[in-house]
Amino acid sequence: MERTSIETIWSKRSSAFWKSSMPYIIDMARSGVPFVTAMVLLTALASYTSLLRAMPPDFPFTLVGMAALTPVIAYSPLRTWLREADIVFLLPREGEMHRYIRRSFRYNGMPSLLAAFIVSLIYLPIYSRGPGETATLLLLTAVLAMKSLSIAAAWQERRLVWRNGRRWMRIARWLVTAVCTAAFVQTNPLVAIAIAAAGILLLALLYRSLPKYRIPWQTLIAEEKRTQRRYAVFFSAFADVPAETAQVARRGYLSWLGRRIRYSSENAFTYLYAHTLIRTELGGIAIRLTLLGMLSGWLAADAGLWNGWGAAGVYVLFIWLVGLQLSALTQSHRHSVWRHVYPLPESQRVSAVVRVDRFAFMIAAALLFVPHAIGLPAQGQTAQALVALAVGLAFILLVRPARIKRKMKTDWEEEDE
Image 1 (cartoon, rainbow, N blue to C red):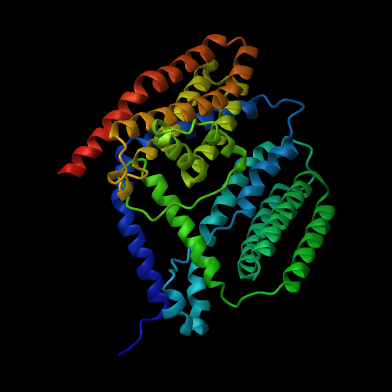
Image 2: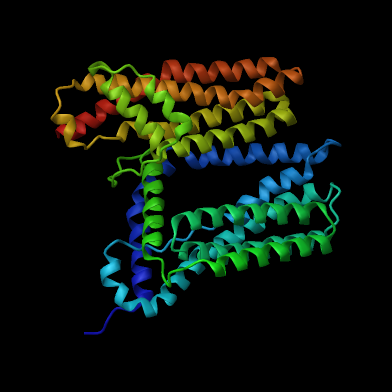
């Protein structure tokens, strides 16, 4: 019997993943996310245009260039679709795995290069108004070259034997990327090229000195699990997604919040859902979304977008997006057997979800409002800021609890059928 080629295995797994994800993508599209995304992009475009028309003399060109370009250059994901069983079934074919990994490089590399190219094109009009000495075409070429090298370096990191070695080399790669990006944005091209060459040589020497696997099976499997788990957490905001046990992150900077919950049977569900939010990927996504909303809010408020009403709209949009993501908390532990074993009333679970959701939502809303509270009143647009805050609070305190209770009631009815 002829063996299935290694490329065919990759293709079948990729197709199976997207086929299984398509129902959730359809549910997401029906929820209005494409419309909201379009509104966010239009708002960002208006803010960007206003910034170009009235560029402040003290604008931090280098800092903005580093903040915009470093993440898209250094972040280099790799989807391999590998599973734990592959350690048994594909390990004997390790000699063919270079063709399998090459497919993953093409699958992830081209979109990553395209993202770096698009962000560079967005930044170049800002850069051209600053003190930079590098020609725009050379800067664009340097970004794409650094991105290609970062993809290759990230692969070497994955091959490292020791976990601490992978962590420290990842930090070193990000730091070198940031320094090289700043050099190309601010200094003479020849100096920037010299700095980049020194950084590349330093990383190459470090990579060569550390022990590596030929194929880092465990690392690739763990990375694939994390990626699929993130998709499941994201899709669970729109539909009931069966998923594996969530990955736990310590997040010491937030764990103190859970310790403030009084230890009693009445707070059992509150304790559970608070730690679920703090320690799982759901909390991580909510944090990143809040930070993105703060950045977008700062840009919109600083530009006084549409006389402040555009900035207020940005605030309300991110309130809705954060709420959309937090709604996945209602799906957590839904299929856990222990809920039917321990003598705890189901009504406590609903009130606990509402309580944790409200607390997290209020923190996110406060952080999202900070740039608006600073930027809009400074331009005489206090009313717009207050209206945005009032709409956000009304949604969180009045509309949101009823939605959560209705959603969880619907889930109960589905379970009983």
